[in-house]
Image (cartoon, rainbow, N blue to C red; front, top):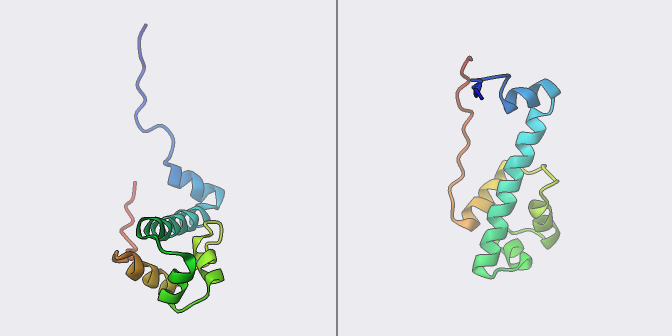
Length: 101
């Protein structure tokens, strides 16, 4: 039996999402999940409560709930920077390069 190998069939997953018109939405959800995961992980490893995080951020506990809600992608750059400071990780924003295929 002969095995056939196909190289680069079709487009990338990113291209598919763009064609469907949902690329930016999916990217925002993925980024928000990482931010929420970083904060949740910090809270668990440092034994810090949502109330304590709210005090560190100068905000309310319900706002911390919104940050931890992965379905809510609405988050400001200022909030992202505060989360980065709390978890002790730098925030990097990179528009990157676009390469033609």
